[in-house]
Length: 360
Image 1 (cartoon, helix red, strand yellow):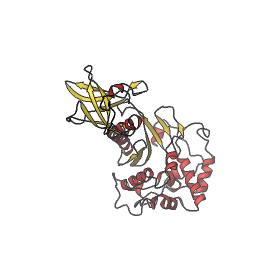
Image 2: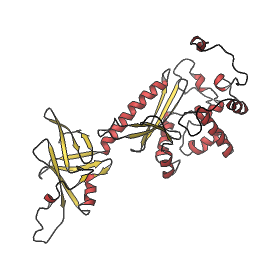
Image 3: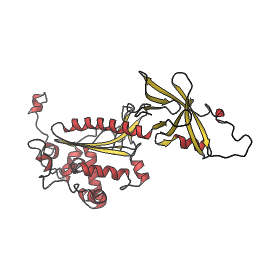
Image 4: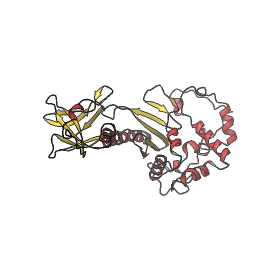
């Protein structure tokens, strides 16, 4: 025995432990499963702390069958596969493995295996396309209403780390290293692996996006985890740039014109229109103050006609440094200069840092 060679004692299996499920290729009967469960002490007391449990998912599968009067596979088919038009999620044992990916010799055993009681925790077959359809279905509220989806995408308990928590059934990771402002971003994931196969689904509610990962091979889980890290970096950093941007242009007017300005997906110019311009059109321009590469934003309301004798007077000088957020100015822009070239800019009030993507 391999384990005996590692120092484990050479002992016989207790007679009350059934030779099925995790101890052999034979599935336990439901009676054998519950008898074995009675012989096991719980790891933690209920509600005490987070602990992953295959047995928990198996019991949920049994409960679904009792509640619906259908097999677990039939419930998945009616409630998920058919509404989302999933082509491959049709059961828990593949009759035809000719189109399957068999990465190593003997890999077909994981495709032809009947997982029995473990179907609810490890027996679902799906293609990358179907996993993607599932994620899109969750985000577009095709399976649950918006409020139910938002309630589902929440932590149920926490771990000892500030950067990971546990949902139902989510493995939730929080990262602060992917945005210039170190803003925390939560990534809701669910992993799955058995034998030479591994998969991840990931949802990022802040951006309303998700992605899926499928891996096959001797190191499938390690590969899927590495891909999760890289995909999260690419998705968050790319979408963060799209959600926050400031577009400058040179025209016939003074200073540099702000053509577009967004922060976390919202229009800064639109917010200023509502707060200060009474909904009128705004011409926003930036001017250098002549020190430390700092510039000031000046907002002008345009298109207003006035018959007042002072209608053509300048009033924008009243507005300078009048809009602060949490103590810092929103109308200040600081350019980042390296080797005489603009590399980016920051807006102190918005805690916004943007990298330069093109030339004026």
